[in-house]
Structure formats: C-alpha cells, structure tokens
Length: 213
Ligand SMILES: [Mg+2]
Image 1 (cartoon, rainbow, N blue to C red):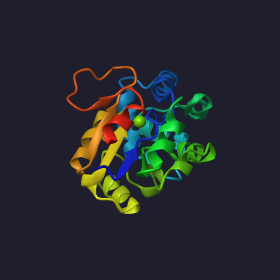
Image 2 (cartoon, rainbow, N blue to C red):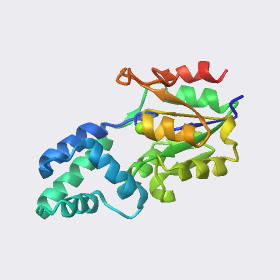
Image 3 (tube, helix red, strand yellow):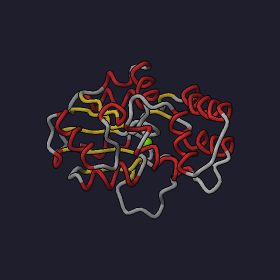
Image 4 (cartoon, rainbow, N blue to C red):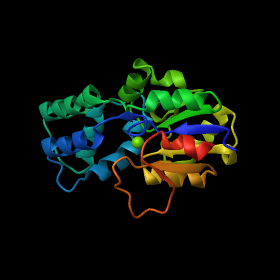
C-alpha cells in the first residue's frame, strides 16, 4: 500500500534545459576537461546546498579549484546563461492533472536538488501548492543522493519509508538513493535513454497511476 509519494522536481515535474545550459556554460567559461556530470556533482556539494550562493560564486569556485582565472565578464555571462534556463522551464503537459489525481488519496512530497533561484521559481508558478512537504536542497543543506535528505523528507511528511514511493529522472539520486533509504522507487524516462537499467520505469507521470493502484 502506497501511503505517500515523493517526486523529484527538475525534468520529472517541470521541464528545464539544465544540461544544454551547463554545456553552454562549459564552452563559454572554457572549462577544459570538465563535463556536465562533473558540474552537477560539484553543484550537489555547493550551489544546491547553500541558499546564499550565487551561480557566479559557484563558477568562480570551480575555476579556482582548477587554478584558472576568468574575467568578471565571463563569470557574469555564465550566470546569465544559468538564469536563462528558467525562461524555457515549465510544466510537462500531464503534471498538474496527475498531482491533483494522486493528491486525493496520497500524501505528496517534493524532494529537489535545486539552487535558490530554482526553488523560488517552483513556488512562483504554484507547483509547490500541490505538496504536503517540500524539501528543497538549498533550504535544508542536504542534497540527493545523501540518504539524510530522504530521512528528512519522511520525517516532514510523517511517513514510513516502506509505505512510500519516489519518482524521478535520475537513476542514482532518485531511484537507487531512495531504495537505499527504504522507499520503493520508479524511474521516469521520457525519452528512453536508460535502456540498460534494471528498475521500474514509466514514460510519463500518468504511468504512476498504474503503479500505485
Ligand atoms: Mg531531475
């Protein structure tokens, strides 16, 4: 019996061109030997868990770890590219109807790896209104896949791990980390990129309705 359902935010409930923008930033800042995945890992340890850190400060930190100097102008432009991701972000077509339907019989929780600008955006467009517990990494100082963020979310929602389901688009942070914390988990794979993985998958959020009945 699924009592509560937790959701990842970015590219699960809301579309956001995170990878495209980070690839653009890597090119603009000329971060040789740095991949999108490298930046995401670093963000989980810095930008995503610090409410007062700007993207500019994050990228300056990345440069200094690599002993490279970049002008204020380049850092400013990188920050501008990062902010522009929210201009094209938005709901997937089925997000609201599925949250409304599931919210009738389940407690709903949000667990997001996000910087403060992303958290602010989700609140501004009203997405957070559908949830009983909202865990933004930048506000709690923890990020997925740290099991403590799942513990915190379970506590906030007053739910037991064994009666919860987690849905997200990242196999490590959303599926394996949730399973480690004792939750059931499902991967949302909208474009079919995770072909080799041995976990339960859905193609869009409507697929959850079949999982929880
Ligand atoms: Mg995501």
